[in-house]
Image (cartoon, rainbow, N blue to C red):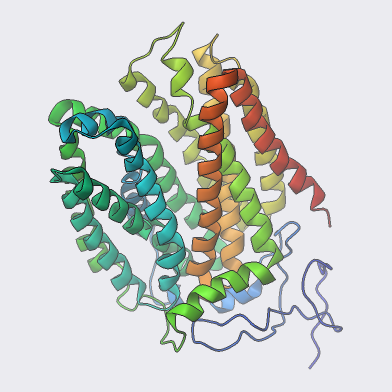
Length: 449
């Protein structure tokens, strides 16, 4: 039987002569077999506004498990707690260095190794969610994260501390396994909303990590930060073990680990939408990191001379923007992903105008921070919702591969911003951030139907 040509058919979508939507034929599924061409709705890389009906057909994981709002909030809390471990150390570096007699260069490697571990985990651990029982995988990673955090908290030599931080970064990628699992459990019509809520937890964890660690270190020392996080992670592991469905979604597989990793690369080679959304992710997180890696520099100088605690509290302002990620999720569920992306990228570019006046007004800074965080999270939620719908059975590989670009963008923005501030000042940093933002907007504008 021949397929009806979709009304929203586009040459951007791989298709056969009769208009059927064709999946890449060489990408292994979680069962180890090749994906077959299917007919159905179209998900166009240009706008992503048409929701694929194949995503609905493959959402059997959530059929027997009711994903209540309480469970979604539990996912968000777990994600925020896990990812915060990557950022706790940033305000604690000086104290750590004094305590363990570390040189400045060695102290700087604490953050570097944590992010290296996180990047490796995105590529080597997150894809396991497509072939392993996700419930066991999540609980196991959280328990191993507890061990790594205890190692950090009890370290008495630089070598032990660095090893513990690298392991902490590696295991903190359980955040992305949780995001993929939440997306797989959500009904297709509500997937954007669920991803938005869970992603809000990730962003809040990132933004509040520095504030929380600084306050706790002032009260009880830097080691208390990691002991408290280890305790909370252990509790979350226990709760998730009881709450999550006992059969965590991944079917039995003949796909080997090497094939699993190669298939991640294959997905990027064959899916235009995935490549485009990964580029969006790289650019928006380069802009995000440009701000957050350098904003403390002008605030600690004239005319403000703000203390570290006040600078860290700036993350509280960003939370207001992060909470709006749920709105973006609902808009995606209504098929407005292209429009949401364009508006958000325009807001991202505009946010650098008030940010440029930071030295003259903290109100301008606050407005810019809210706009920037709102825009970044709207695009991020849209990206994750669309790429998961491509191949739900490869959701962990899709999310993990996409987040590698997030890490590249974050590192690029941080290195470029701090280096540029040293030679050209805050205005040049804002120009850099605006440049990343405008590149994203230009890419979106070129994606016409």
